[in-house]
Each structure stands twice: as structure tokens, then as C-alpha cells.
Amino acid sequence: MSSPRLVPRSLEGKYAVVTGFSRGIGAAIARTLATKGANVHGVYTSDSSTKAALELADELRGDHGVKIAVTQADLAEGESAAAKVAADFKEFSSLAGKAPQLDILINNAGIGGNHRLGEVPVADFHRQYAVNVLAPILVTQALMEWLPHDRSGRIVNISSVSSSIGFATQTVYGGTKAALESMTRTWARELAERATVNAVNPGPVEGDMYFAAGEAFWKEMDPFQQACPLSAVRPGIDDPTLVKLATAKMGGRRPGYWREVAAVVGMLCGADSAWTTGSVICASGGLKFQT
Image (cartoon, rainbow, N blue to C red; front, side, top):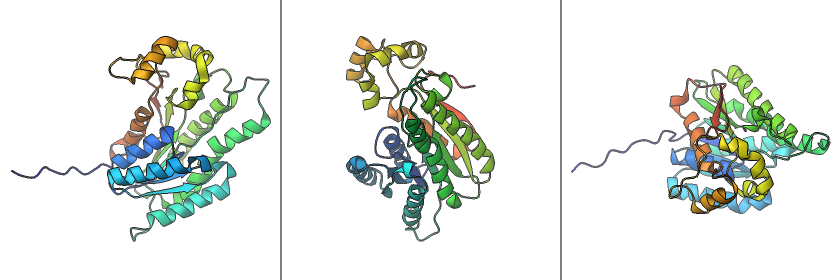
């Protein structure tokens, strides 16, 4: 009997940088890319995330046989943090004995903060814009010299439906994500011979922040969730704990799973996405229809 055919992984040998690597959507994206064969350089912020980042790195090496490196850098610190990421990536991606090449960049790291108009703190405005807007610019600028010159590069910026829905209390956060989407379109033109550039805009997703938000937030979200075609929980398919909570307190609707967002990002990182650039791709279950 002949041996089974080995099918190459679609991102085999590619080098990727993922910011916000240690948890949530960032960790799910790193898993998706590693599953497809990419070597991943993860960037995380704080000491409290070191253990999670190192454990994820070990998991990806062991499960997928890819190269993984991690860098701790507080992207709120601006140019110095971006320079550290670039220096570490150069060392990581040069280990194969060839010049560094950045095939995939995922600008995922972001922070939030909700304030009604009239109560917006100036300090929080600068904090959110520093991480959600300025940091992607600086990180991309620091790494762009290693983008390929054959249009095979892929940049994906993680936005949010908050950029266009107009949720109450998100003057600042929604504004940062709208800025990121505008930057995406500009970069798609400027980097046309180097890389495609797209954004992905999740809606509410699973995680400690979502579940800690409580019933007041869930009730505010209810009209949006009820109109979201794919959010109805399915007993026997969805997580049983989430089904119970959603049925009792969320109108029978669930947030997105990290892996669902990561899968959309993964699609945009492959060769088959070559004709998609400057776009905002919805990964919200239909919470927001993009036209």
C-alpha cells in the first residue's frame, strides 16, 4: 500500500509577527498561523503575560514544529518599543541563514476604555490612541524594510465593529478603530508592490472582559445581538457553560469565539487572498454588514 500523500501547509516557512500575542484573539491568530506552518514572532506587553506567552510558544513549537520567538515590549512606549520588536524579529528571522523577510504582520494589540461624552479623560484619549493607532504605525514602519517585493506580503490590522456602529461610551475607542481602518486603506495603496493590507473587524468576543461586563452591558448589546444572524446559541454545539449563560441572561445569543476571528485572519494571510486589499472584512457573525 502506498504511503499517504503529504499536503504542504499553506504558510509553510513563512515568518509572521503577531502583536498582542499572549491571549485572546492574538493567541488564536498565532495558533492558526502556526497550524498553517508559519513561524511566529509574538509580541506581548506586561510581566503578567510572560508566563502565558512562554507557554503558548512552547505549545506551538511542540504541536506544529515551527519556530517561535517572543518579545516583551510595551507598545505604548512608542519608537523604542517598535525598535525592540524590529531588532528581535531581525535576529529571529535570520536564523535560517538568509536575509530577514517579513511575510505576515498582524497588528492585533489594542486597549479599550469606555467614557460617555462629557466624561472623556484626556489621559485616556492619549493612552488608547498611543496603542491602537500610533503603535501599529510605528511597528509597521520599523518592520516594513523586510516586506517582500512581489506582493506576497500580508498585513492584517485588527479593528472592531465599534468603528462604524457608534456604541455609546466609545467616542475614543471607536475613533481609534476608525483611524486604523483608514490607515489600512492608505497602506494598501502605498505598499501595493510589497503586501496586501486588510482589516478584520470583530464584534463582541468571548473572554474575561466580555463576561465581566455584566447584565447592563449585555442588555445594551441585546438589540445588536438579536439582529446578528449567526449568534444564536446551539445546545450540543456551543460551549455548554456559554449556552446556559446566554439562554439565561443574553437573549439566547453568544459573542464570537476567538478561533472564529482568527480563521478569517488566516484566510487573508494566504496566497489565495492576493486580490483582496484595502478592505475591512467582517468577522462578527453578521452583527455588522460591511458594504
